[in-house]
Length: 60
Image (tube, rainbow, N blue to C red; front, side, top):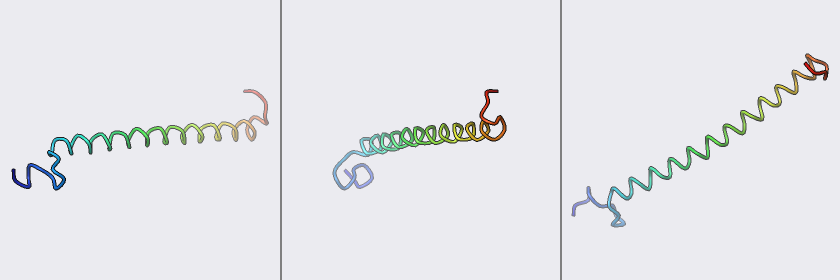
């Protein structure tokens, strides 16, 4: 086989491609979880500030 059909480690390109796609997908999943957690934290903090400053700690 030539260099275009196998990598240096002897792994077929399809396997390498599948592995890289899985790594990217897993990274995207972790990133989405981190972003969702940070947005939740942000909205909670904004809500607390509004409740204390605008509402004076009373219920709306």
